[in-house]
Amino acid sequence: MSAQDHVIHAHRDDVGARMGMWLFLFTELLLFGGLFFIYSVYRFINQEQFHLAAKELNPIIGTFNTIILLTSSLTMALAIAAIQKKNKGLSIFFQLITILLAFGFLINKFFEWRVKLHHDLFPGSEVLLNKPKGEILFYGLYYVMTGLHGLHVIIGIVLIAFMTRLTIKNIINQDSYVKLEAAGLYWHLVDIIWIFLFPLFYLIT
Amino acid sequence: MSNSDIHNSGHQPHGYGIYFLVWLALLALTALTVTVAGLDFGALTVTTALFVASIKSYLVLKIFMHLGAEQKAFKIFVIVALFFIVISFVLLFSDYSFI
Image 1 (cartoon, rainbow over the protein chains, first blue to last red):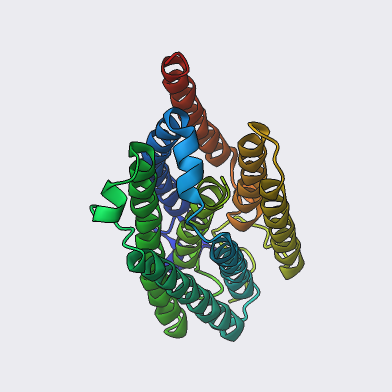
Image 2: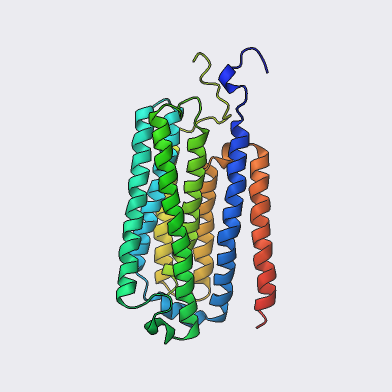
């Protein structure tokens, strides 16, 4: 502790905070990793039926949502770059755009699922239960994995909105923005999970 | 605020440009995945899709998540985590590929 250090920085450890966030992300990796294990085994055993079932999914909505999520990752990274460059207004702007894009993703998801429900393709429905076992498994995994991912998007929106509030109140500022970085790390992980979900569910026909 | 340039984060901040470049690369790779899925490469299709997804993840990890600018310990942690996922997949399929 040298005398030049700011007093408010005395007990701050940004590197440690980011490390903590990364460790949390590894547990998320384990959570989704387990689901990817289940997916890979069932797909290996039921290859034909997985291909057939995936034909019901709309690759255009999937591609559109991929573009939305990738763009929201960009705006999140830009929000951190802006606060580093002491541009508070721009950072808040990019955070709001990120939240907006996240809502766009969820709205797309809502319409996608609504079409499935109209076709009576939901877990436990009569239409689905009369299909072969592999297709039932595909839809089970589809709803659980994209559903859990969607839940993460919702959590991400709450998290980023909270960070926006802290930025407005100057608690997150050009000198202390590790909270925003942590929220960013979470958001990028949600993006990475979708990067794998997208081809594995929408593009296997 | 005299030494506000020296912050505890230890990062050298990127410019905005690199993020846009990575974003463009990610979009291009998405277009590639969608195009390849339209062609019939048989078993190679899923391999290609996973390979492209891995490149995309690498870009997100390195640039968006600033892993490239972090201390070495972060990189080792990520490699160890991914190593165990790969091990799990290898062991899983050493069982299932004989069914």
